Image (cartoon, rainbow, N blue to C red):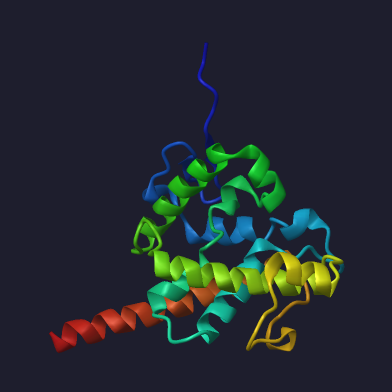
Length: 206
């Protein structure tokens, strides 16, 4: 009997193996395209467009960047914190709890391949991961109350009350997929330019 197919053909032409993903098969264009078409909250949000994972990632990185003085590499990890979902989709937290460890194992392998492709640590450092998680919870609070029909009381109980940031600081109006895709790529490239500038400065100073 043939083994089940465990790879996906990407629009870039790459063939990404979900069980053993290679950084060489990871392309920014595929990530941005996929994330811009994956809906947060299983699509249960107000507006003519889905609130995409690409837009959510931009919001999380914006919140993360406002909290302290993160490095450009840390900001890139924040922007890519949900990048594996371009392959495996956005599974809501209650269902993740039901599925268990198999999903997390695939997600972790994909994250490692994505990070290596872009010169980041394969595993997000714990301190950075905690700050990204905090930014993610703040974004979820605003998404829940503005778009997904949660009451303030429900959202405070599940996600906590945001401090130091308000909804008007963020782009919460759901964007068309092509616009979310464009903005995601633009932000990624801006961070990469900053990282490249830092590397040049370090070489010049050495």
